Amino acid sequence: MDEEPTKSWFYPAIQDVLDVKQFFIENFELPLEIIDTIIDRAEYWPHTTSILIPAPGQQRPIHVNAGDERENRLMVRTPPIGFVTTDIWQTTSNANIPPSTDVGPEHDGSDRYSWSLNAPLKPYIDSEISEEDKAVTEDVFRKWEENSLPRGEFPCRKIVFTIKSSDQGWGGSAADRGTYNGSFTWFDIGKERVIASRDDLETHEEQSNTFSSGFTFPIACSVRTIIPEVDISPRDDSTDAPSSPFEFHLLPGDYVLQKNQTATRLEKEHIITWSATDNIDGESAEGTLLERTEGRGKASMDGKYVRNLKVGDVITVWAKSRFGGWSNHVYDIKVEVYWAV
Image (cartoon, rainbow, N blue to C red):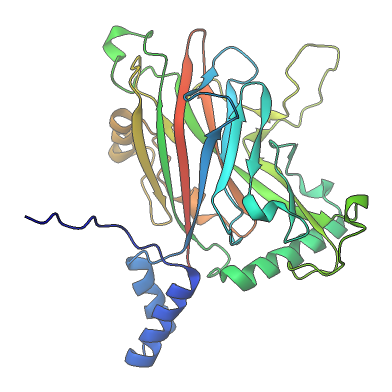
């Protein structure tokens, strides 16, 4: 008996979506609003993919240990909404160095853009961004939109997170073991925003002044952090307080992406889908069930995060651990971001 062929999903590119739209227009003369509704119901959207990779010489899993300055660690960064990638983005996370994101061919400034993505360096404060950088950023976003053709101001429709992880395999209350109760290792979502600027550095003097990005001068893209929250209070340099400008909550909050099962050494794969159409109230019975049985924040599926993403926004995933002895063992993370054309 012949084996059935392995089925695989078809993931449309931007042109595939345009072709389907044109088919409906030519053959059924449907209004564009109805065509867009059909496309959305079918979830026929292009997407980008981002993954976590270990640093050279580092073994899986990556340990995020509680009690040190790296108990809040950025693990994955996605391409900005509206930017069409030529390859999968890879973020390297290592206990001894800041996380860095390898964007493949896009990393070469002589080809498209140069990027500075080694950890979130600064919070996003609008008043600290120069008017020149704001103007360049707007021009860059318009160039991106010419290629990605995002529909509307908030084009993101769905994010799929695939996380394989575990905790240290012991500790906590015996009653909590194997459940999500009493778990102090988890994952949170962050958000960054791209800032573009002229990159008239000496390293570019010998390069052509014509770039495929569409500009006559090189563009440098960096990111500023919106989430986690920024601590804007004055700092006392005479103390030994952490230098991080970000506020990290002590315990898992209502918007936790995913907790690990408590005191369970065997890694578990969680697939979490956030959609723009989600509307679960965190105070509802559904929200409570989400928290207790799925290990997610009770308000994490209200849909607001996805609905508010716009061109230039970057999604980040952070691994967290709290209290002595607790350790988040991270094997794999993949983030797929879908947007409407």
